[in-house]
Image (cartoon, rainbow, N blue to C red):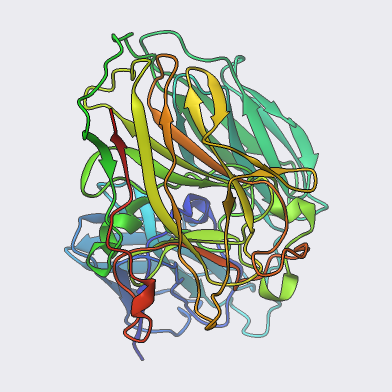
Length: 469
């Protein structure tokens, strides 16, 4: 029997190093957002005396297949898109399993995986039950000016772990613990013209886990040469995005996240962003302001906190909450700073898909090293805001809200950077407090395309950051 599953691309690098628990049958993992698929020659277990199966990988980019180091009982050969997996005889009475990862050679990430399961010499042997333990991401990069980064440890409560760093300037906090944790790695800004890196080793002495050690490579970019600040000509578009159905694959290149991703709930941007796909240099990012899992605000039955590109090419985030923020960044062509006196505008449109999306937001911009409010802020009950989202109009239609700040820099500034922060946990329907995040709490960056029944959702002007004067 053949098994075919379409799989979606996901930066879930920690899965590539893990061996799965024994499954009832061979299994192909499903990652949301990919364009790869695997066809197995059989879903049956390999017999205890040994045997083979083949996996046909349907993926145009070049790939390799990674076998966990602990699975020395497997060997793999590859001929074009066909991978042959051979298992040695299993001398144990206990069944065993390994998860093989398909690695995109160009991106150097796992795009899908499949399980190989082999019977023990006794069919009725009890399956091995491992405790959870993993850490990730496998690698991450930060700018020279950054002074911290987030990594994640996933473990059962009874599994104690420690973190060591190959570079004493990179300090994990906490450096030890047990169970799940979000770890902040702190380090100084890099002023050197060469990049700096550290290898963080997350390990446990527990004998009840599949792998007891994981390494994470953290690279800090080299400091850039100082450039003279410039004032681009009026009308210059620094960065422009086009959100439409035809652009789904391009937009999703760095912005697709599964709910199971270690960093989906953690503070930060999850390592994800949307690049300009029309012109210019920049990023659209969505940051969690807090550790949402630790805060206890996730609806266990309908949990979803993630970033993705919708089927109509609209970036969407699930699980907005107070202190979350959107970051729009645009650079000049040669990445020179913007000179004082430069007048900038940002244009984009937000549409809540649920009335529990945050209602009140504050737009700010970076002026030199200082965040300033764009325009005039209104006073709420203990918070400030200058954007108020509405869930639905009088006819019950979801409502697009245009956000279009115009600001003038008073100091030379590294780039055009706008920050839009949720300043209250009030929902956008009636302002009542939101206490749980549900999987339907979606906030969209509105685009050109939409369902034929909802043409009023369409936005004709592209998101952009440009020089006004």
